[in-house]
Image (cartoon, rainbow, N blue to C red; front, side, top):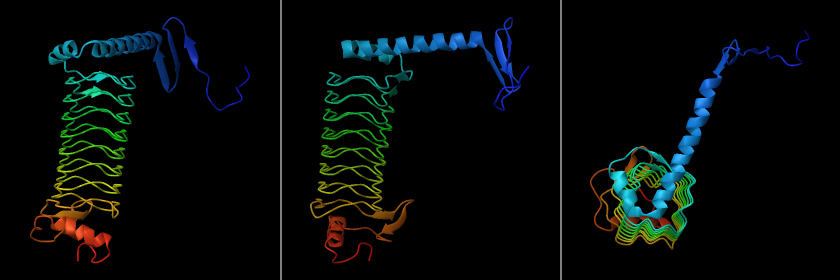
Length: 269
């Protein structure tokens, strides 16, 4: 028999055992069939979950009280959905479309919503603790008084978002876009603001104790009045504490940042 014009060895087919194999590969057709059937069942199950959620939030919430396993609603189409007070903890919403959805007071703790679209949605007083929200789009979204403790918002778009009073304690905002966002009274204690775009952002009265401000981008339109905080870090890894000892007085962080913007005095001197 002629050899094939590529360097791979022949596979042998044994119809009785229903296997295809070569020295480094073995695949049972029954296993493949079971996997394919299970995948279809999972997909159909997820579609039923989505239909249930869209139909009636109260019924969904009652069901979720006794069923807390992870549910895959990735890429779900929920634009404009009425999901007020919905229990969505531990749900995968990656790449889902939730733009203009009503998610007021919704429970979204521990969700995975990577690259999800929340544009112009209402998440006022929603709970998003420990949520994975990398590269999610929150442009012009209401997150007033939302709980985002420990959430991963790295690379997220929050341009024009309203985060008034939001709890962003220990939140990762590295690389996020906060241009024109409203963070009046927000708690950013321990938050990572590394490489954040914050031009025209309103931080008035925000809490900054322990926040990392490495390479963040601000301009003269950034509001830094009445900031609250004892100290900040100027480099990641809790490096370059400012001030190196003691603590700053009320509003002093904002004043020093304003001086940096005006190039009167470098921050950290």
